[in-house]
Amino acid sequence: MPVNSQNMPPQNMQPRTIAITGGSNGLGAALARRYAAPGVTLGLIGRNAGRLEAVAAECRAKGANVACGIIDVTDAAGLADWLKRFDAAHPIDLLVANAGVSAGIVGNDVAEGRDTVAKVIETNLIGAINAVEPLLPAFEARRRGQIALVASIAGLRGLPYSPGYCASKAGLRSYGEALRPLLKPLGIHVGVICPGFFESDMSRRFGGSKPMMVTAERAAEIIAKGLAAGRGRIDFPLIMAWALKLADLLPAWLGDRMVSGYKGEVEEAEKS
Image 1 (cartoon, rainbow, N blue to C red):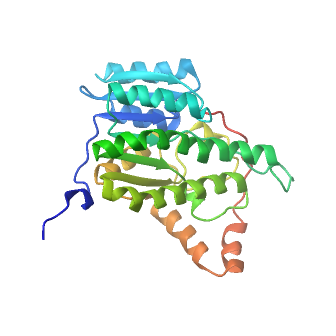
Image 2: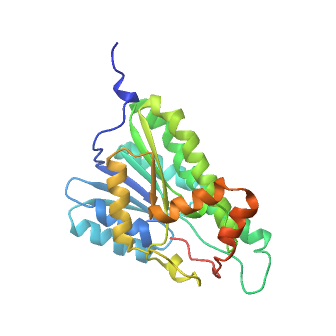
Image 3: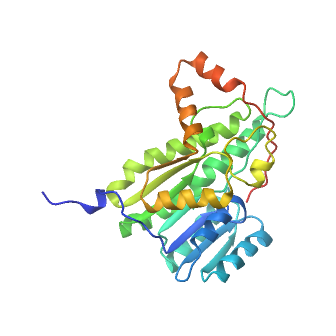
């Protein structure tokens, strides 16, 4: 029987053209620096022009060709236009949907507020969809492409300190896991990334404990290696990921007990 190579796991995928949302700081910036090299073209998208250009300058110094888009990922039309124009000039091998914000329970409040939750979901979930959907026709036509969706281990099981953030990341995880088998026969590979804490402005704004936190550079290395190997899920640290998966499998009352003691105020983080 002939083998359909498009249905086989990718072997050592090494993208040469990468688009990254939220590329001006944190994980997005670390991934940009990780991929920057001679012969590599980066499309970096963010809201802060000064920080984005600083990251771009670092990447150019490493030999990469860099284009910057000062765009909010909630601007669906503007983001789609920029991505399509960038892809037409530099066919994208890898899209990293990384931009996000955090929010959570403040003080003795019992609610985040409807507007806060809506803003988090609009950025973290809808913003990622805004990046993915415009590129799917081009990826399908080329019968290749890779999509990386940066969710969170907070999307594995709801946590009491940040319902809206958990909902946004759980939605993004499910979106990616639905896309993965849908797009695989077309030669398009989807990686869903569920990291724990890594050094970033978002982590610094979190007032609770941050177990097993790694540097942004270490997180970028783990992600890049997982994507190169064609992994469909990249969860780290594994101990925390498996603990939350277990909490989700247990009866609700027991799972709730496991996570109820983990609390911490989360202030809104600036979008990257």
